[in-house]
Length: 171
Image (cartoon, rainbow, N blue to C red):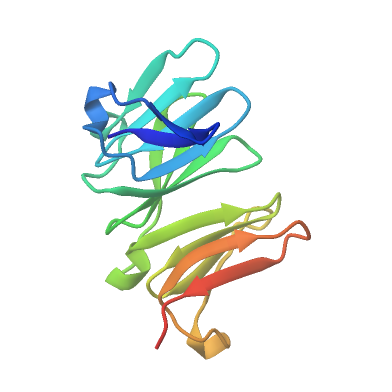
């Protein structure tokens, strides 16, 4: 039913009235001006100062799939992770969406989280971590063959030194 946050030991519920989300928020990203809420085949962009809501959906190029992860990069491109369809990218200026990555390996199309720095974006999948180099455009997959303990990466986090940390499924 929207988003809940704790303020003074009580929960406040927000954005329950965005009908396109059907009360189902699966992912969140924000910057100074906006909050993006990912749902099932839809992203709601909320202007933080006016509360104006803009909807991005299949008409803009989103797949019919759950939006499991969102990440805004340094170029104000919103990276969109999906449950089964890979990675998409939203141009926040034009509201146009392009498919950025999909694989013949369905495990790589299941995105659990996305994080990044100025130079790299890390995408946690069920088949390892995809690392996109924003400077060269190259992408590299890291998994058990490169030393990770498991390929099912649940979460990727960058610390203050821009070191990636991954949470994996236990064996």
